[in-house]
Image (cartoon, each protein chain N blue to C red):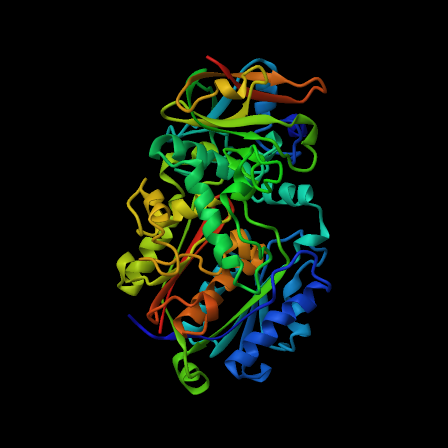
Length: 393
Length: 136
């Protein structure tokens, strides 16, 4: 496996409801932390890439505006968008630019300020991240789309509501100890008990998915700074190398999707490509971040990534194998479910978590045994885009 | 023009496939088939993704299939709140699939994965045209 491009700096704002500032100020929070982490100045940066999903704030063409605020002009800058996986796509492009020799160091900045619009407006915009010509006219939204997968998957594979709840309980365990997470409370079975009048998570949103099965909207930013081998060795004591990158796409319309009980095809496609490039197998992965926008998505991700055979993802959560002390720790920062999902910032935040894990700097969330290989799985839309990136020390 | 009449609320005004709405008013749910290579598409397309031809014909979709999956929306996006709750699902005809809402008279507790269903055109009170999944 080649060690040509490394992450030399990571940063993330706190993920919050109702950030008290504008998008440029939100972006600066992650940027400042990543620049200090990398120990570089703006003149060291060759180019910047900004990533978000459009229409949550009013700024059109945000790259130029944010580049100026971050002090990254006159270097080239542009915008990359694959909805919820935008910043992973940005990292793939940055990797390519560095590998091609165009730039030595590239900044990838993901941001999203979702709180400027209502939750119903947000659902409408997210729904329009799918097929607006043929599906949005039926009143589609993200929870409903993922519920289509959950319904078919549960019917075929014996996955239960308790299994989904246990995914949420796991994320709550780590959201409690992640001071950057939007949802800091623990989650218990009583929260999903419909007969309990205080149950916060029992109400159906899009059956079979309930409130507790869905991730939290949040405002947030993330920043990943990539460098070529020469600069990485010069600036960083602990560079974390990109060993493999895979990406895939799938038909937008549900009518053109293969078997719903088999999960998202992009998870399988992106993982196969990333493993091949890295020359690694699922057994080599010691810590992972997966795209748990809904509890069912985490179960499907286990299978797409090869951590469990198809249809058997439930065993991992039943055996607590994806807890910090388990065989393959997954989302031990709270995941999208508890840490929050500020769309354009999510991939970069997942990468930050894995980089900190591989540097043994994840604090109370640190996976024991100094993991050497980690993986990020970041999905855009309803499995419309898939990105899998493998990192190593 | 014409496609703003599709569905509960359309987000697309102009498409080369707007004849789909006219066909719905005639009681037909149709996809498109490529005259050159024979590839079939639903929802309909004006251009063939297989051979790049733009020479497409219309064909009538099967009327019966199996419900592959479904969901009941208890929360709706902006502009659809008045319809809640509503059920949406995917019908598998074998060669092709279709996504739509389920008919209001199908009670959620009677809906099961794998059940036989029919598809039929639907006109809303405000004149909007759509199609729905109904009891077989």
